[in-house]
Image (cartoon, rainbow, N blue to C red; front, side):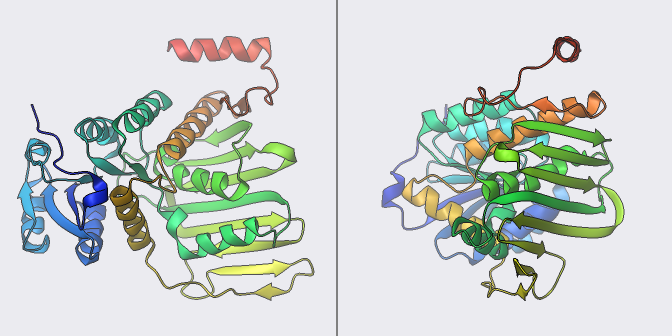
Length: 348
């Protein structure tokens, strides 16, 4: 039985954080968390001996290193957990942390199916703590500026959003839908301000093309690949009054805005590392107990879209409705043939 937290978040001067996962991406979290003045990096946990050796050398003087997650849960001074482990462990670790009164920042995807995501969303509400998903591009300064411009009406009504995210995968067991699509789905939701009505997808576990039908005739197209040696990180938004191109592979002019006549404008963008902005946002939300920009609701919505895309892919790209409480009445009914096919998929 683990003891509860000692003090409410509102009384914190520093957030005592434990990191689970000190692999390639987790090491970036160590660097960023150590640099944040409101953070005390208290624990680093990893089952891999090499990762623990690295953590001993780079975790800082106050960080304790362990292979046992129970050590973190037994620490009553711990306030929050950052989870940078393989996706299959995200749900179980997040649930365990929330049930022990810890706020959680979990890498994307939050969960590997909507059922898991729904459990996490419910656990976050029941705990009264923060559950935030590492949809890092939501904190990219270029995306923050693009969101501001769209909200201000600078591009007019958004008609299309298209993105391309390709690279050569480091690990052969990655699936394009779960490894890459959460980034773009989260961006589409944020920039359009809407949930997709229908989802269609074609491809394989290594490359895929998604089409998301949005309200009012808008549409999003997402290209994904884990086998392309040419790395792309491209997002294009077309509106009734202008368009925008965000290319994260550029050193300069990552965001370019075009007016209705095609004249380009490069807005001034803050020079902030997206991971630093993401972690700082999490720390603020956890210390003040406020809802994060990419919270459990966003993670659940993304999981629903990814699962619907996977089902569409199994049906050779058939467009399937994304049923949520918000859009259930907007989605056209499925035909009887499609319903029968989906019942077979559900049984498999």
